[in-house]
Amino acid sequence: MSGIRHAGLLAWLHLIKVNDKMQRKATAQLAAYGLTLAQFDVLVQLHLAPGITQQELAERMLVSKGNVCGLIDRIAAHGWVERGCHPEDRRANLLNLTAAGRELIEEALPAHEEFVQRQMAALSDGDQRVLLALLRELDRSFSRCEH
Amino acid sequence: MSGIRHAGLLAWLHLIKVNDKMQRKATAQLAAYGLTLAQFDVLVQLHLAPGITQQELAERMLVSKGNVCGLIDRIAAHGWVERGCHPEDRRANLLNLTAAGRELIEEALPAHEEFVQRQMAALSDGDQRVLLALLRELDRSFSRCEH
DNA sequence: TATTGTTATACTCTATAACTATA
DNA sequence: TATAGTTATAGAGTATAACAATA
Image (tube, rainbow over all chains, first blue to last red; front, side, top):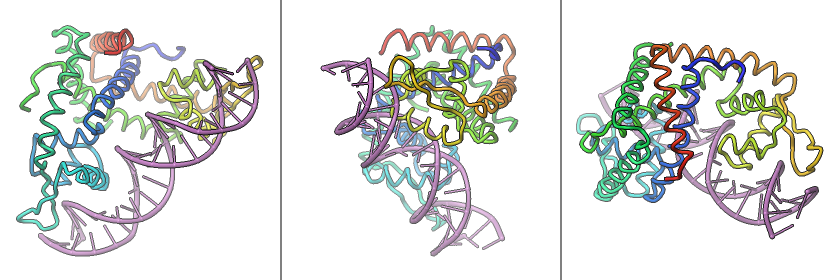
């Protein structure tokens, strides 16, 4: 690897690799519930913050509102989420899990958490905390400026 | 976040987030060269290991040979890579960068490396090395077993 | 028979932008 | 005018599987 010398670059390459492998595992793990990663993400967001609008969801997921619309379409087709009326703004939709959606995420989320814990168990508790701190720092630096 | 307590899970969520943001930035950075991330990855692989087969490339990229076929189609359409004959196995293609492809990657790779260094600069040199070590450990644990 | 590459299908996700209905 | 959501288009990536040529 001729031009590759610095730890930062190598760290980034490994981050891609780890993310890639984890994503494949996670995708397979969630497929058992009929969920894609993006759909799981939506359900978790609505689980944590019921009643947000599609616009708010788009901002949280760093995705366009057009994409959110399609995502919600697909999830609603399964009957896991519904669009409600905003009492004060008739343009907006309030998103909420249905009973089926709540049931699904209450089963899928703990299973997914346990799965992730199992993957991360290769690192000691202390190392997991260090990793978290470093990633938090990186994330914060991205938010601070738009290099 | 009710069920979310452990550092491992939080670390994973932040890893997703960091990867996501970096990928967006990287995608934008590479678009200046007319490259997607996957295509850049292919060019880098062929830069480092000229003359590999499509099958070998698929294994390195953790992707099916059918996908590699399409990827190479798109990159070859730009004239950056060519399929050569394998002297001993007429089924196989040997992949090589064209002169244009070499020129492109020799320009895009250092620029991308510099871009990544800039993103990682939020961490000290020591922290970058720690991050690298932790991600390497995780990556190795994924390779060891298929949990 | 097994393997390399090709082709075809179908789906998800993404970006972009025009469109509507409200505000 | 601006905003929330919708729709349409186009492209990339992925998975899967059937297929041809060759081993």
